[in-house]
Length: 543
Image 1 (cartoon, one colour):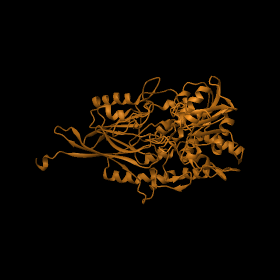
Image 2: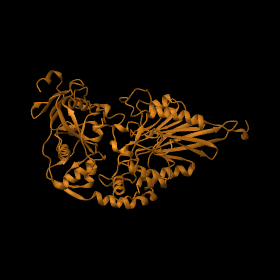
Image 3: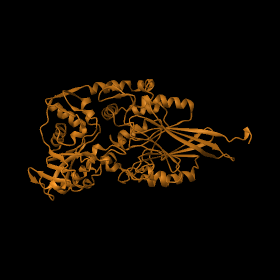
Image 4: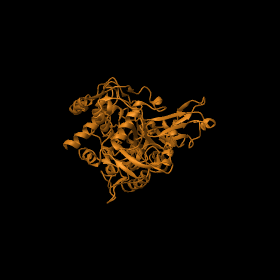
């Protein structure tokens, strides 16, 4: 073959961010110290790649507009003033993103704000499986996007979202929407796109994760349908590249010929997939090879000046808001160890129970520590301190539960622990791998209980009383918890369909701030009575 007869080749570069959760600027808002993560830090890598590859495809894979104080203040400003200048949208517009996918946390502030975000974006939002109930049409934009690259290469981008959202989100935030099965939607649309568009490269952008180990195919979680990326790669023919998210994992894998990438969270990394194509006789292009890698911020480089400039004004307002003092502690409510906090009653968790029960009038409360980095409270308390501990925009729900439901929930919570080989209590790896889920361990007030990790799962509740009297399994109790848990989130299926006595619209962080302002000399009265033990079956009857 002569030089003139060499096949024509072209490299398509795809860059994806996912689960940014409002992390635009390189700052840890809890400590106000600089970090080397965030979109402003990744931007230099993205811009450098675009210089090398001008037709680079840049995609965000969801959970963009919620998760940081900067994003929270933008949402609050939009609700109170009607003005919408969300820092995440400003940043993505500046970097000329080609598309974004709807993530589950996009709904946290309601559809009105989400639709403002969509309208202010210079790129389409994709989600083929989130449809208007009345029409069956995609609710926020086209199901897929076609990009024509200059050599005559046609690229299809299909967007889908984990359909598990109704198990977590407040009903009024998703009213009028239907969430179709993501795997089934991908099967339908990939076949349709292949037939109707005949693309040279088909990319699925899925805000969801891998339910199985990418190497051996063994399930890594209970197969609820929340994550279906492994099944997509294995069983849907026609996918070339699968961009994933939701689990906050760092992955660059190949599954049955499908290139799979997941770039972590908070701007820790971006995913980069390089696809080399060559032109066949007759003009058709075929994929010659694919390569996936993770792009990490270059710590020695400053954050992107334009991204910083676009968000400077809101950042200044955010810092002023965060530094507002609202009270101080009379006793130590700091958290030295998240692990130790989950082994016995703790004053910080007692404070959370007090807030929840006072706000709702419920007789029993359950709550979780939401972040392993939660500092608790000690000394002066600012808005920053509150948001450092209450990182999600959860609201409160009061359910009517039977005593048996409470026992079942405690058995689910008890799965968080197991015994090591030397009979020490340790965290069950199912709650750490592949995605940390420490927030699915609950602690209760208004009941007295003992969980014995030395006993088999399902029989670990060895004491369950209220006021010193065994809890009546058939009696009904009013129990307050966050809306995520009340919907069954975290495998608490015993809550699904239970009568709702009360739903509050105010977010938990705001309830805590109001409580502290009304009680500026803060202390926590002991309201919890429980413990974890590993005495085993032989000793259980003595408890």
